[in-house]
Length: 129
Image (cartoon, rainbow, N blue to C red; front, side, top):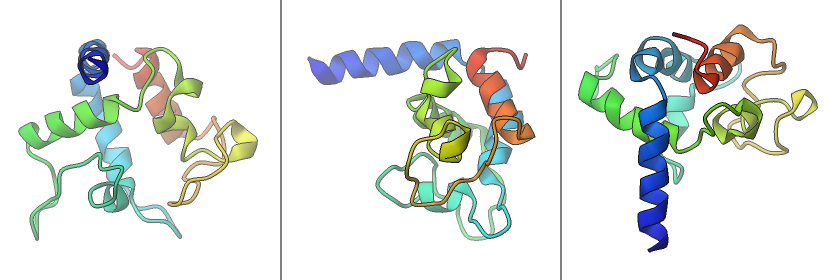
């Protein structure tokens, strides 16, 4: 019963987020390596909070089907319309900028004004159409 409720909530959430914006604007940010860091993809395609499909050796981009699976997984970490309540945005955000206390992959963004963070926040808020 609880799992069914979670699955329904995740399905409704996914239906409200824009897949095309995810694929063209959000996913590239999550694939990007930042200085002194690794790309979100690097950890989150292998660890216990797995968000991304693994790429085959030599593969540099996801297929549409893989992106759809990624979209569904990432969407579970989003509260539609509430960027500052969305783990996708607050977990890798510096604590002093409104992020949570710990992220084993480091803090990817130091400010809510960072253009990449804003792109994610706009997607979550439905402003990036």
